[in-house]
Structure formats: structure tokens, C-alpha cells
Amino acid sequence: MTSRFSGKRVVLCVFWILAFAAIPMWIRTDPPAWDLHIYMNALHALQAGHDPYADGIAVQKAFHAQLALHPHDPPPYTYVYSPITLSLLLKIGSVPGWLSGSVYWLLYIAGVLALIWVGMQACTPLERKYFVFFAPAAAFFPGLLVQDVILSGNVVYILYGVILAAALVGWRRGEWRWFYLATLAASCCKAPLLSLLPIPLLSARRQWLPAGLTGVAGLGLFAVQPLIWPSLFRNYLEAVELQFSYNHDFGVSPAGLLAHTLAEYGHAYSPASTIFYLLYALAIFGLLLRLSRKFMAGKISLQQWMPVLLVGVILLNPRVMIYDVAPLTIPMGLIVWRYFAAFTRQTATIVLSLAFLVFFNFIVIAFPDFDVWKTVDGLLLVAVFSAGCWNLLRSCRTGDAVQRT
Image (cartoon, rainbow, N blue to C red; front, top):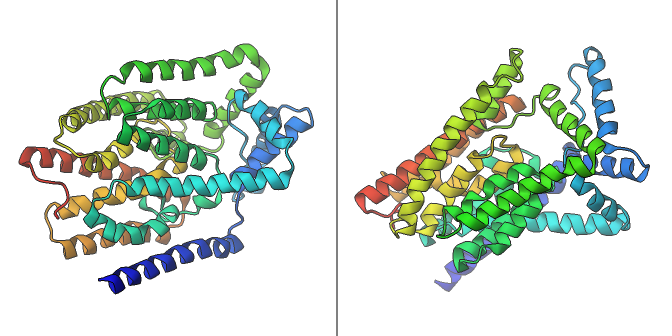
């Protein structure tokens, strides 16, 4: 028994070593930190006394004015975090670059590992035996599909790592204040992260008031910015608008996919995508609310509830970006595993789960277009969430556990 356990640990260590070794090899063919370079450009503009949004907008407009000369070149991106973040960016810029860079990348690695660690907490003992070997590769498969976004350096990995670690404290100890503080702070960078506030609502009792107050505070912090920085905020909104009109960066949510399709046919600002979002968001929240009552009544365990809850709450974000599905790799994998485990034996569950993963990754590898990736992942997100809800409802109806043991 001891030798088997030691052998498993050796194999697991090898997997983690290979995962870390893959990063420098990947960097050799794919230059990293593209989002971090956007932050650095904004910092340099601030240090020069410029408006970072105006500088970025000028670059974008110049690029698109001559788009016919370079139709296949990747478009430039602008700093699109709200003006409230600029003072912090300046303070970071006052620290020596080697120090701020080292701290940032350490926090970044910690955020990535935190997402994997939190996801693993939803595993049953039986599932953990298999998912510990998938965990080292999870960072390379955001939303279950292979993609190099881990190399981007986007700050959202740090934000999600802190938020979900705080959520785990809430789930285990019933203490949610750290989650609210983390979400409120993160919303200063990305206001849509306020869509994570339903997590405590759907996990514990008497959370409507603190969640509501946090949401009001987050919206208030956003609403006060045009009064404090009117010019910066106006340019910030234009920079955000150009993300849609120039880059068609609508994300992988159902509303985002619809908006992208409409934009391709010249209807970039059709209200159809907004109406569509409101309709399905209300349906998703209603379904989550129904399932949460079963969770609070003890009919669903936390391990069963976590993956479905996280996928559902991410779908409440109207603009689900590739970074937003990065925390869902293990939760989505667990839902797929449990769906097959509901009507097959263990060996068949392993084979079918691997076949599922290979099939969809074959599609995005065979058709290496980012629009294909977004479409497949968006559809996969909805399909996996639907499978997770079906499994939980079936479990409650039959009284069986989601995972056969």
C-alpha cells in the first residue's frame, strides 16, 4: 500500500514538473505577457503626463484607418480598467521594475494555483484519485479547451484567485465578509465581477442584505468616477466601446456570441443581445435559486453544488471572457465526469470523459481560429451547465448521490 502511494506521488510530481516545464517551451513560440504590456503602456502614458485611454484610442484609430494595408495583423488593445485604478498603477510604477514585476508574477502564479486548489475541493475522494492527475494541466485548458491565455499575465487570474479562495472560506466557515471585500475591490478593475455576488446568496442564508450592500457600493464606486475624473471617464467609456466596435470582443457568453454574430452582419448595437441576456440570465438565476434551496435543505452536498454554482454564476456575466472560464476548468470537468458517471461504470466514465475532452479539443485544434474557439467554448459552457443542473435535479429526485462510489 505504501509503495503504491509513493508511486502515485512520484507520478504526480512528474506531472507538475512537466506542467511548469511546458511554460518556457511554450513561450519560445508564443511571446507572453501581452495583457501585461497593455498595463505597462498605460503606466508609461501616466508617467509622461498623458491620458492612457486617449493614447490607446489614438493607436487603435490609426490602425483601423489603415486596416486595408494589414488586414491579417492583430489589432491593438487599450487599457480598459476604470480611472479609479490609475492611482494604484502609478504607485506600482514608483517601485523598481524588477521588484514590482517579481511580486506581480508571484501573485499571478499564486492566483493560478489557488483556482486549481479551489476547484479540487469539489472532488469526492473517488474523483480526487483521478483529477489530481488532471490538475497540473488545468491551467492550459480554460473552459476545457486548450488555449494559451495562461501566458497573458492578465490581472484577473489574481482577482479570481483571491475571490474564490475567499468563497471557500465562506463555504467552510460561513464567514463571507472576505468574499465581499475581495469582490468589491476586484470590481474596481472589472465591474462585471459584481456578477459573482450571487455566490453567497445561493450558498448561505441571510446574505441578501450584505450582497445587496456590496453591489450598491460597487455600482456607487463606478458611478462616482465621472464626477471625479470626467475627461478620463469619458475616454475610458470610448476605449471600452472600441473593444466592441473595432475588435468585436464580445466574449463567449450566449449574449456575447449573439452580439458577435449580429456585428458580423452590421448590427453591432442591436438591443437583441441585451434582451436575450436578460431572458436567459433570469432563467439561470431562477434555476440556481431552486437548486440552492435543495442545497440549504441538505439534499445536495457542497461538493455537488460548487461546480454547478460556479458555472451558473459565470454565465450571469453578460460578457464572459476567456479569462472568466479559466476558473471553471476543474468544475466543468467534474460536471462532465458526473454526467457520465450517472449511467455508466467507472471505466466507461473515464473513457467517455477523456473522449469528450479529446473531441472538443480536436475541433479547436483542427480549426485554429479564435472565433471557432469562442463559439465552441460558449456552447460548451451552456451544455455543461445544463448537464450539471440535470444531474443535480435527478439526484434530488432519486435520492442517489451524484457520484457513484
